Image 1 (cartoon, rainbow, N blue to C red):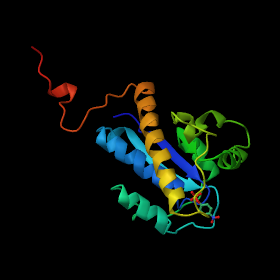
Image 2 (image 1 turned 45 degrees about the vertical axis):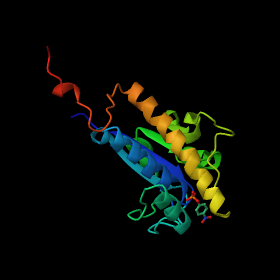
Image 3 (image 1 turned 90 degrees about the vertical axis):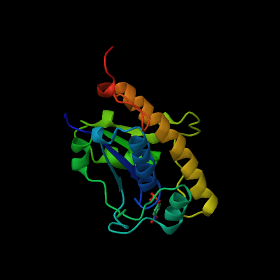
Image 4 (image 1 turned 135 degrees about the vertical axis):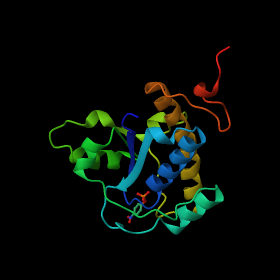
Length: 178
Ligand code: 4NP
């Protein structure tokens, strides 16, 4: 098998938005039977929460939507990630600036994009930071991430010519020629 497509989702603290984006995207990849093609990570541009679990409110939001963030531990985005990952999807414009700031020789800008570029209803192209708000903000992040991750996966399936199959469907190898 060829190398997996390495994807990283990035926010500020890596305890709310990007852990959720990773979990939602991974779930969609699994549902499409494509897990062998992807390596999926998340991180934050800040260091305050390194090693922490995901925010309780985001863990609850995930749980309400049948996803688990229990295994998550926060990490910080590093300059080396610019080389290592094929695609880096950032949650807001401040994350974009912070990540691009680490690209000292302007080599990797083409890999770094706002996640909401893939949102069919992109508003200002940013996933709002829910940290200082209430539960509604977390639910809103879930809605944005859910529809954006869906579109993102479809775009990557097209770009890399991957064959998506619904669970239980026959794979092309299973289909006998007649
Ligand atoms: P996140 O949310 O970037 O979506 O993980 C935040 C988490 C922590 C802080 C800010 C945003 N903070 O200021 O500690």
